[in-house]
Amino acid sequence: THTHTMAAAGDEDASAQSVALSCTLPENYDHGIRWFEAAEKLQGEDRTRALESSKAHFDGAYTQVRQLALFSNNEEWTEHSTASLRFLQVPAYQAALAAMQMPQPDDPERDAKRIVALQQARQLYGEYMQLCAMLHFDFAPYEVVDDILKADSGVRKDRDAKIADLKASMAAEKEVEAFAAKVREAQAAGALDDELEKEHLLALVHSTFLKAKKELEMLGMELDMLLKMQENKAAGKDMAPPQRPRAPAEPPIVLTKEKVKEMVQQGTSINRATFQLCTAGYGPIGAPTMTLEEALEKEMQFAATSAPDQPPPGSEDEDDSDTDAAANAATYKAREHDEYSDETRRGDGNRYNMG
Image (cartoon, rainbow, N blue to C red; front, top):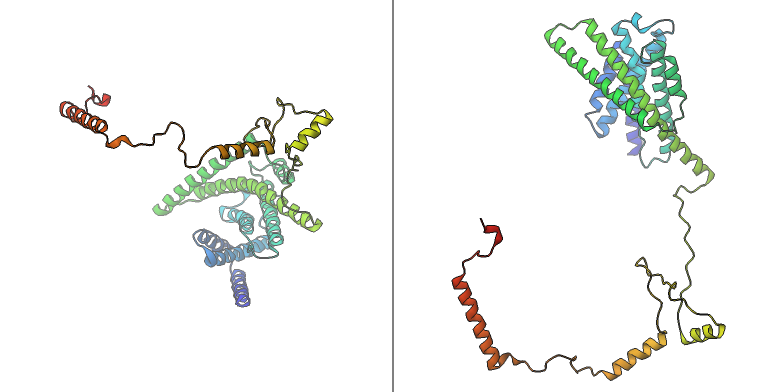
């Protein structure tokens, strides 16, 4: 069954690639986006197939963009049309698809496959940022892009830098949503022009650039963690967290007659002011006042002197509940309660009912 599933998945992947090869660049781009957006609403095998189809079309679009040399370092983004400039998003989509590749938990090569996917995603995000710098976008100068790509992925940014990046990313996403709403209104009215489409595309490129910057850091941290895990496994190191060394257990102190005699002979004694016993977190208690033999002897003497059938002092043997005095007292008490109930209304004395 597993072999049949793998063969079926391979056939579907091959068919998706063959379809992508037969498509033009605009068709591959549009199909890739369509499958990418459809995968967000699917689950299980349907989502996996949608992502594979999207990846096949974007891989085909990526190859066609390189074959056509669509973007070069001797031109700016202002020289491109809206139709050609939108293909700048291809490596960003490829990076997002690579980051979504999660091997099965029971796969023995899970970590190795995930490392390959993370490296590929980081490479594609970096390529996208370099393209933005090459086309001289205002938000992507070469110096900024070089600093981002050369930054150590294991070092986290400070709080102020994270807040600034988060605010910029949220503002860019809101701008994209605003332009998208305008585009939909213009399409519904049949008045969509190229200028509005270009403004929407520029806002999308800016938002994707900020997302690529954040993803580079997040994916880099995961990559460093997996690489360290592989190094530790190769070196035979235990991945369990180090345990704190436990303090050696104190020997118990048992006071017996022999121990007391030994202390007397040696001239040693117990300082009751500083003597403490371990009581499992309940705090120290005072030093014992007698030996175990003395405590046992005292208990035996108490048990011998007290009769088991003798009631404790202060208890009465006779029950006087049936005497005339007790009966009269109960009768008078019942009468007083009846008189009080007849003369007192219900609720009198309740402070919450007082006006």
